[in-house]
Image (cartoon, rainbow, N blue to C red):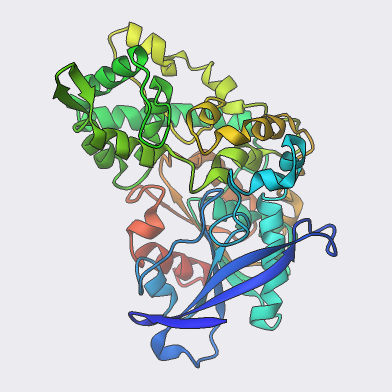
Length: 432
C-alpha cells in the first residue's frame, strides 16, 4: 500500500482481487482499486469506515483534492473509502481497448453482464472484512451508487451500519420501459425551464440542429454530431449548474468563415467532451440493464419509448416552428454509431439489449423488514431518478427517512458541501 498527503488528508491506495463471477469464487479474478482518505490529524484514530459508491454506472470514484464537498464532513468522524467500482477508474477498466480481449461479441456481452449492482455489492462484501476486521460499515451511495446501496440492503444488511442515499432510490418493481415513460416528461420540463431562463437559446438550438441536419459534422475526435446527438446535450440539465453550462455552449456555437457560418472549433471541442463515453463506456453499455428485473430483455427501451413522445423527434421539431427539445439520461442505438469509443462495442451492446436473464436486484420482503438505519435525499423533479418512484420505495423500506428538497438538483451532495450529508446523518441517527 502506498500512502501520501494532500491538504488536510492522508491518502492510501488499496488494491484487492475479487472474482469476476462471485458465484464462481475460484474462477477468473479481477482487480479492484480504492482510495482510503483520513483526516491528517486523525490518522492513528480507530475510526469507523464509510464507503462511497459513485453514480453512473461506469464512473470511477471522484478524485477529491483535500476536503472538498461532502468529504470534509465525512472525515470529521469516518475513515472514507472511495471505491472505483469494477470496470471503472483503476478497477480492471472496461473500454473499447480492453473488452475485445474477451473474444467475440457474445463473449464480450457475457463478460459485461458481471458489472451490475449485484456484482458491485458482492465486491464490497469481499473487501469489507479486510478493512474493517468484519465490522459493518456505512455506505454513501450517490445516484447509481444508491441503487447499489438498495441492493446491499436487500442482500447483505449484516455488512451495513448505516446507509445514506443521495438522489438514488430506485423503483423496486419498475422495468426499463416504466422508467423511461416517467423520464421523458421530466426531460421536457427541464427543457422548458431552460428555454424560459434563456429564451435566446430557442433559436440558437434550432440553428445548430438545422445545420447538423444539412451538413455531416464530425468533431476532432471522430464523433459524428447528428441532430439527435446534439439533443442529448440536455443531459446537463439535471445538474445544479447544467442549464448555465448548456447556455454557454450554445452561445459559442457559430463563427463566420469564407464559406459562411460554421460551427466553431470551440463548440465542437466542448460538444465532444460532453458527449463522449470514452472515459465511461459502461454507462452506455449497461445503462438499461440496471433496470433489468427479470422481466425479459430491455430491447433498447429508451429508443422504443421515445417513439411514444413524438415531440422529441428532431426532424419533426425542425419541420415545425416550436423549440427543439433536448434529451438526456437515455441511451440509444445511434450512440454506438456516433461515438468512436463505442463503435467497436456495438455488437456486444446489441446482445446485452437482447439479454433476458437479468436477475432481480431488490428484495421487497427483506426491505420491508429492514433494521439498518437508512436516510435518503430525494430531489424534487430529479431529471435522472423519478421522484415518485423514489418516494414509493422510501415507503417500502422499513425505517427509511427522507429529506425531500427542491433546493438542489441531482448532484446536491456535491453542490451543497457538507449540508446534505450532515442532514442525512442526523436523520439516520434520529437526531432530526
